[in-house]
Length: 213
Image (cartoon, rainbow, N blue to C red; front, side):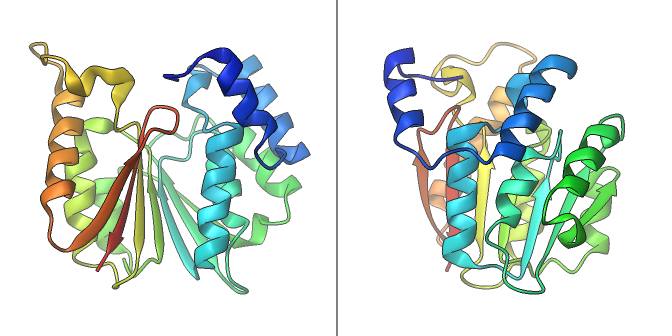
């Protein structure tokens, strides 16, 4: 979801760092061959993820929700020397496209991919990550946040995608709409959490940027 005009969106694209050629090819193939291609981070959000990663130079990154691997490759761009990105997804049906582009990138040796239910995988991991990107099943956003926030070191950053949810967070919640309810509650929870600094960015469908104090 984009809340600005196509003309202004194009202006933003034109005045952001150019999309790397490999990611451009991954985006094109995702739109051609994969269901729900709008889930892809895309050019501007991808450059935002890359810039945050470069600013932090993290040693360890966690991604919940791999999809076709676009955001993972963006986040890897700023990894410190010897760093690692762990990406979790419950769906292994997109492994073919992840493999293709991970192997073609400079980052294939830095990515640890785990297929499984993230709520079951996370307790088995060392959760001392420097940077986390959450873009998975919305109904579990609060569970992911609560699992991570105590374990992350001070200064760690969490980025949560789709927190505007096409603007539905401001509308009456329809019966059975668990995703909208949880996203709205997460936004309220983070904003009132004294353990963190946060800002909700109107980037595409909304990104909540959180820094643990």
